[in-house]
Length: 254
Image 1 (cartoon, rainbow, N blue to C red):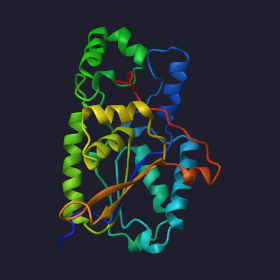
Image 2: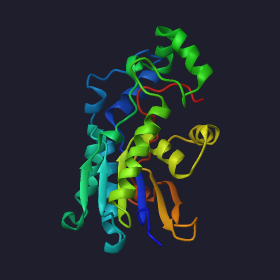
Image 3: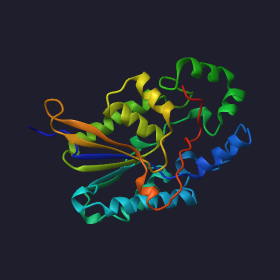
């Protein structure tokens, strides 16, 4: 049997960012705009986010050598890159087959809704707010931005790369909340209703680990099987506070 998939695949959301903190402050004050000056791709980790990334790195580094990642792929956005770099500090770099930033793992693009709170979206763009509620977040594409379907399309290409170049490897992907959710949609063969139900149930925590193991007994050539969902023991073991603030901007759950 020719194995198509990696032996192990981890999908991780970045540590808490300054944008997550600013969003919390804006919503607590019933503000319309999230007060952050950087471009979304330049938003750094918060101090807590750095601690979360270090805790996760220590956990990966403590795994047996034959269970550690051999491939590290990450979003080029600063908060994801910094999380990946913190993990990389604890891995034997000489043993890694690839360490690559991949723009296909970037955050969902929010277009003209960038930096607006849900209240700000409703206030400034009531027609878009109404359209989004009608269409739902899976298909709604803000002007200049992306829908979840757009993100899924580029992630299909990522998985093509993973199955072509990294079969039998242990692959770690560091991205964003929507990246985690859309990869789950693809890997678990979900549909719109099931992935939105998963999304409603809980936000993806910062530095939470979702993982898949290759099971040769599934299908004709084996498949990846869900192993962990939003696993937080690496942070809990270090006494690192858990955060699960959605990325900016956000809109009401569909």
